[in-house]
Image (tube, rainbow over all chains, first blue to last red; front, side, top):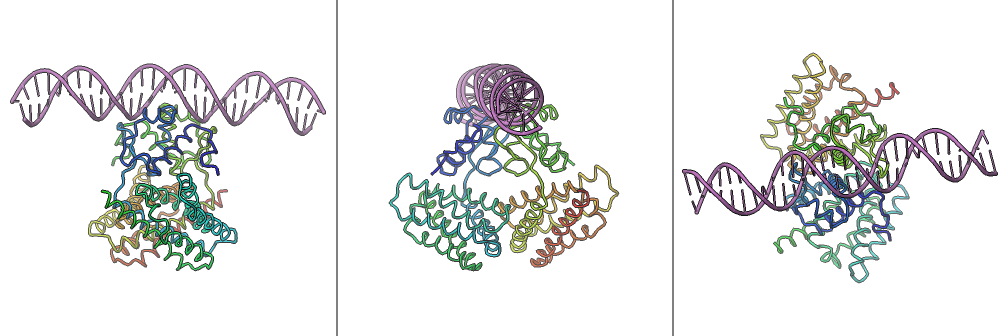
Length: 225
Length: 225
DNA sequence: TTAATCATAAAAATCGATAATTAAGAAGAA
DNA sequence: TTCTTCTTAATTATCGATTTTTATGATTAA
């Protein structure tokens, strides 16, 4: 419902959110130079606020900066994608094992409802608007799964890695290919394993899920290169 | 040798490094409000650069910001310390298992030399200057251990968690208590296990090492509260 | 007294302009 | 031509001033 409705107070935060969004969605290409003045005009926000927003994104790993040479969108590479995926698989597995052990009823409910919303969105005819909604729902589903672990830091790490991965997926426009494939089913498997409190099954499922997505991205990228 | 010698080009970066240092060392207390003007005078750097530096520290988790209410040093709590430690143990274990599998000769050499420097520093009489050197060496030793994993992202996560943990240690001034204890020996055990390529022993050792340090911090904090 | 309203002071956020630095291209020497 | 060196243009980094927002404290009504 509320995409960017919650119009954040400060311009810096607005710039931060829009830049983050545009980088993750691929509207700003990897390695692209981010000229302050150009961004300032594009977003109708002063240079100071833009710089501050970019600075926040640097530690996030979506933007790089070199002193006296300005900012660039973080580059992408097959190597990084593979490393990112492997790291993310391990960290999420860690989180999921904890979630199986610590997750309460609220967690179960959250996972189920997120899974349901996601599957409903996937069964509808594709449209530009739907993609946005799907992306939000997809993010929430994955966050819901790990949220049961009860460890704020673990969740934070998962979120960080998710955002980075998400950009790769968008750059390859894999969601189109994924649709109709066994990915929808994949989410169901994850949710079921969570309900069954089967940690091993969950770990296997997440590994397959992330691994498959990455494989598709790599193939897609190879062919378009 | 070069503490902050490598006088970075931009004032923003300088401010970033000094603020990060001052927060980790505890010179800026947890939850303390960070008033722009005050910092601007303290570091003799304009408000814009200060704000930018603080923004970078936000995603790092050392500073918090609330729109229209400015910045504060991230608060501390027993709960966060425990969560942080548990998360860090798991992530480092993940890294160490990879390092045992992938680490090359260069890795072994690095670990050994860092361990040696550390132990030498620990055998010398304590002084203000030595503490700084020890802190650098300690950081490098831990980074060396995980660096063998060959996964940039895993290393990045370890570094993030290290910095956060380091602050807790400094706030409790545990290094004084640790000295002469079996912590020096602990580092030796870690290095030995790495050389022996004994992943299980390494994991056990890192868990004990981090766990013990945290235990000391919690006790220290409890008594001083 | 207590709560609410308003006025004032303090601080954060933002802008526009300036200084410093780098990149690009032209002119001249080998 | 090819490589320097210099000049100019573009861009980043930085500052000081202005605007906006929040916090503080006083004043008044209940």
